[in-house]
Picture (tube, helix red, strand yellow):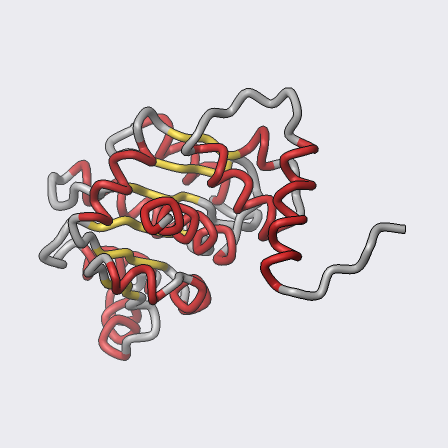
Length: 209
């Protein structure tokens, strides 16, 4: 029986060591490897070895944007709460989630669309480049694609990891196929707000290391 670990740093260190042992033979370079490990650490799911896709230079361009004070926009308050605010604020960055704003809800109801669509439109008006961390709403990804096609938005990164069964796979593949912005996408049905936050934190940890 393996020894029990009690201190948080010991637990995390041992967890990462176990993950690395299970990645033997998997040829994923840094900095993508550290992000993959953080996602596996969050989910205990090694399927992300096959599912997590990175566009060329996505991580390096996103980290540069964060170092220049980019905003992070999430589609759930859960993802928002999971992002390390201390690291974020040390870089002069901000994080937003507009989904619960009363005016967003009212506009979505009046137009007969989802709050995710209105939230992404609201985010397009922010003054700085944005990283979009989408872990729940596939319509947010569809909205981002429409805004980019209309030349109303130029994301620094799209983290496309919504979880579920309806429009999830299709919305992720849309981001990959069009490739209008750097992306990190979890292909298939898996993902979630915790995964979106984990990817953001992995990049923040790399910068603050």
